[in-house]
Image (cartoon, rainbow, N blue to C red; front, side):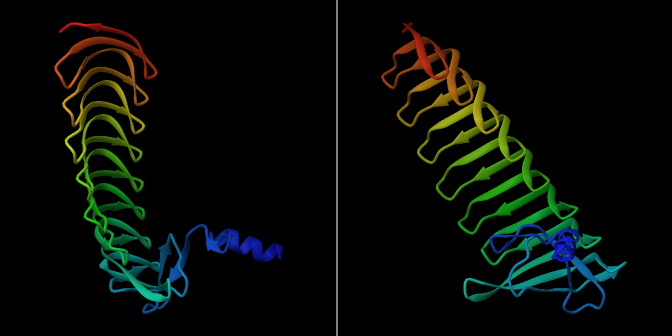
Length: 233
């Protein structure tokens, strides 16, 4: 038993609640002594590669096809692009059986650099990536009509950006860890407006609030709680 656990640890193949928690090296079905890194092993899975192998690892350009059993049916994922040391590296296109598609840059097996990720429901992200997370400048658009154009850090809106909802509601300003933060301008679908300071997604500090009827106020807030409101128009 101890020896078995040691071997599992060395291969990175740890089982938790019946699922494979980490990746592993997997041999190509159509290549002798050639392996690829499999980050998410599936049941009854096989993989083929049309490119070359260097030091027993996929290397250079080619097409890689994964075939696996899921939800009572055979599925296929494919990747056409470059690899290095058995991992996606450089430019490539991944197409998933679930409708997901990524066209862009990779580094050491992860989305890294510039790329476009499309979900099967017409949602899309076009922008920067770092270690599989949205990072840098990018544009996200959703099937429901929502859209974000701005900066990301580690997968969350962070920096400057504009979020527009399908009903016309809009926020343009600062973000931190996915929440409105700093100076921002909000426009509601009903025409009401707020131009002022936010902290962690809430009004915080001084700002100007305009009602949909046109009434304008200087307001002071703390953690979303209104402390003072003075009419100026």
